Image (tube, rainbow, N blue to C red; front, side):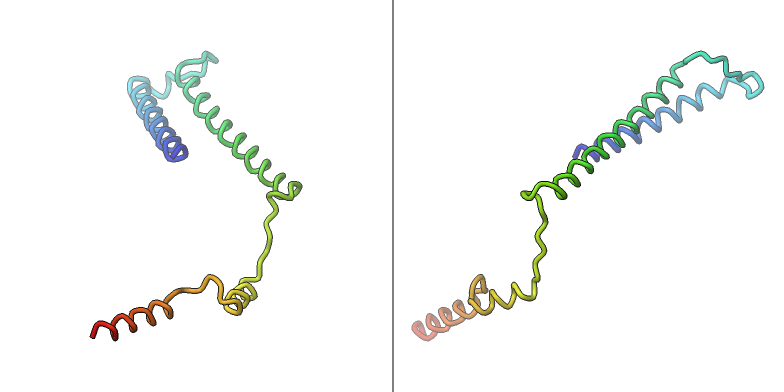
Length: 116
């Protein structure tokens, strides 16, 4: 849910920035625009959006590195590979964890014959 909210907030910020730029540039001709080096709210808003991107990339990278470290060095998080064909054969051989269809069919047939 956080990711969805973050993306919606990011899209909203981009739309607001786009509208602000259009409104500000509507009254200014292209010849009069000079970069004077002053920080206006456009620059602050752009820095805010860039900060959000840096924040997301930084903490996403830390999250990935944390889990990679756990997989590589902590045996508690080790991923064990299983041969599912062999596991299926073992379960079928021991009659464990099978469906109850056969037993249910036998019970229903006996109830049917008893109540005929």
